Length: 254
Image 1: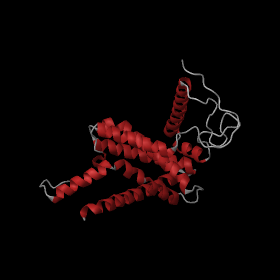
Image 2: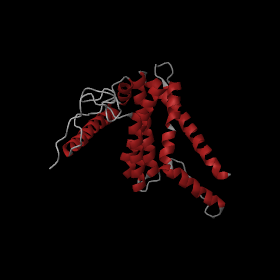
Image 3: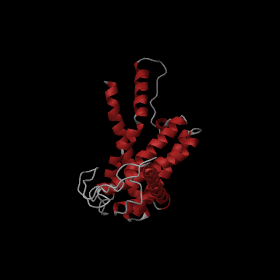
Image 4: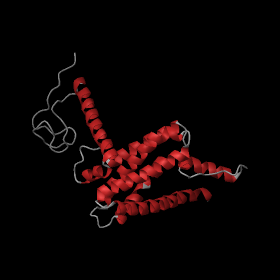
């Protein structure tokens, strides 16, 4: 028979952080120290509560991104964060899911995006170099796409300068925008398996529309201003990302 859980002694230091606490919940780290020894019931309840909290936050975030994209980022930077999944975490998870689905369905994301590394068809050093570049960019695409986001956040900060948002707050908008773009990629990946370039262009167009819509709500500007500034940011981001990829490829030519 499973032993009954014993409450932690009063005024005992928190087992997690060592801070002294007289209540059930540690005033320093918030850990629940009321049960003492673990019990199966407590483990299952903890798992259930974590799932419910994650599920409700995820649904609220996805619903907000679909219906009021800029409002989600605004709510988050203004302190109402518990109800949403963190932007950096959501961005990383959606990117991983999209690339996983693309690999499973054998969709070449790089080629569909227009970033091809062609071979000459004759063998030799040129073909070997092309193969190495393709393997490098394909194997590290998730990291490369994630590392390109700080540049976009900085460009957004410059483009919307004077709207009262700092770099960290623009990071939130960019991460949520990227999450929406990766989710679109995930949804459209089955179609990309049949015509990758067409549906990749559709994803890019929808992502741009979403970015304009989100910027308008987040910064409180007109549609025209949001469109013009987001277009400028997108062009500079594409050029900057291309330069970033080119610099990464330089060591392969030495």
